[in-house]
Image 1 (cartoon, rainbow, N blue to C red):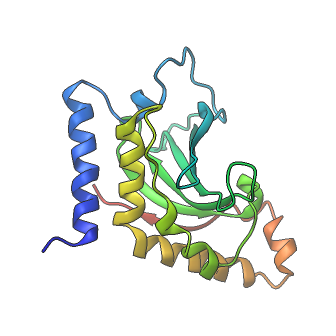
Image 2 (cartoon, rainbow, N blue to C red):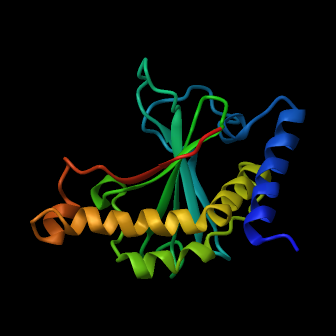
Length: 192
């Protein structure tokens, strides 16, 4: 019997293979129709939101750094009450310029301006992330979903580490959440 993780990894590989067959990757699909890519802008414009699962994501890149393999990252969220409700950041998925998975990481609350919840409540939202939308690309949406499923245990651990970092600062949680010296709170490098 195939495990859920194995199925998700197979789906991830399938999405990558179908895109590659057409000379594409998750980034070329995410940037489809975009004339110029600018650091910090959200792609696709307006983000992707699935009204059924209440999952949301966007991609952005930072200004290019000579020594960085990472082109940018997908920020993945769930909005349990819908598009106008609170938004909770699950994880960021870092990729290289060819859209290959490099790392998973969590960030401090000020980075994405989400509505803070503790690790236990946030981890319970992981299973809700399931983007089944045609735009910008069904394959990109499935690829992101498959990463969340395949690495669910690791993401849960990253979320727990996030809370340890933020509560171990010797200051109030509110101060830690706004502390700009704390950006990435936990990270898992994916070996390719």
